[in-house]
Image (tube, rainbow, N blue to C red):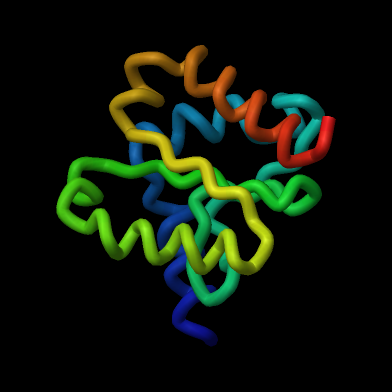
Length: 115
């Protein structure tokens, strides 16, 4: 089994609290009818949340990402070069302002879909 696929399965099983909260609202086409997948391999990376039809990736960043800014920026550049729109959000924003985060995802999703 490929390491990326194995890691994706582990990440789906071991979701953070922020990922669980956001998934509750993204699953089952609840947001603008868009189908999101969680912890999906994309371009040899694992996207936290992926909407294939809009080529939108939603990445949730925790405290450790404050120390890996350049690595995250390079990851974003690679995914954007492959044609994806990448929206990076902080875990604490998801937990403290879920409605605001959902509004931001909805707006980005509509733009990515060209609506």
